[in-house]
Length: 502
Ligand code: NAD
Image 1 (spheres, rainbow, N blue to C red):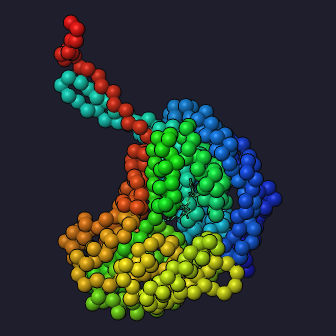
Image 2 (image 1 turned 90 degrees about the horizontal axis):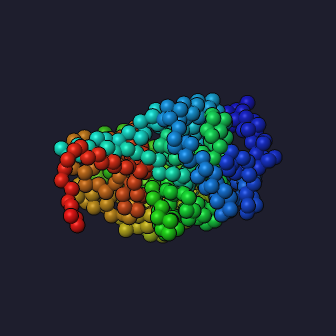
């Protein structure tokens, strides 16, 4: 049997129960149908029906928020060491079921097995990382003056809403949910409607690991009803959102009446800047990897290549060779490097940018077309000869489409890099240390990698500036969002108190 046939057979056994019973919500530890009926989730590989999904409405969100509120005092009050044990157990179960999670993720999202098999394990690492931090999550500082001792302590903010997108949904959900639980918050999770499978698996795993009922609640549904209701619910104290910038803006408005705290990880149009003195081969590998891996459906993808004019022709020639050799195919094939895009709507959006790029005068040097037959497959595409004003150089395409621009000197590279609305990540390739430091200092981005692709070290902050986000995740930064800091001031003695009316 081929890889694909073996994995399809395994997948079939995992999906049988969803085909028969649908994907249900999980509220207060109980399976629940959706108040608004069901919707379909289909595989982007061949458009086949995977399952019908409970379509949650405002009443379901209300039930989930109430369950999260009821579970909050006990979970928040639990000894952090106990929370640590449960979170480690969740990580253990993710590892045990990593293949099942990866298979479901590939089939639901079109992401290639070679990346998803690692993403499931990465999700387990996220849980382990925050499990180890749970016992110290409440820790604060002593801030002393001769007259007072100030003691700060941290307290979980309350029930929170987590709203996630369809790209690498399992990994991203763990990135939000693990720190929330470690902090002592309870959660209502509203996953993306295009990729509900692994959110259900995560909720089941959490319960199997001993997470008390109501601590993590799952409500599937659409953004405009279930998502909206979650952002407006008075018992939900904060919203951790990952998705498009314009949705972030809507969520901010929706949450205004209830004064929601928000944490936003939004879109990007991230530059990879290759100077003339860069390590050519490594820069080439990284630039290709960062735009075409994960189908280009990746917030930190290096979707704008800025290459110095003196090396541009060579760089482009080598790129065209490599891009044309990228293997587009079935996501369950170990050899596949690019699978199908998530959905027809997204496929149409990506293909429309190919037309926009051509109409605006850029040269399509590789790709630019869909694969024939079923599924939303797009060949990896490279535009050269583009200018910074073109839409393909400014707008997030979120697919395997790279726009290359050339620059004459450092100042011009910086001006182009900073000229877009986004500011999530930047990649700088140079062997001149001073230039690397100067350039990354002036780059408008929340994260910069110098002479590297995106490699995450879990304690470091993750997030963007400008239209790419608000707030930071990672390490203690996650607790800044999920917790309130309280200051308690103890007077040390006999400081003078003003006597009014005396
Ligand atoms: P999206 O904004 O369309 O949807 C994301 C989630 O928001 C979904 O669950 C959706 O149902 C929900 N939603 C939609 N409208 C809503 C509303 N009015 N109220 C509440 N919830 C609502 O994004 P998408 O297309 O699923 O994901 C792709 C986007 O996510 C890209 O822009 C990408 O850059 C971004 N992203 C950013 C990061 C990051 O870390 N910065 C990571 C991954 C993805």
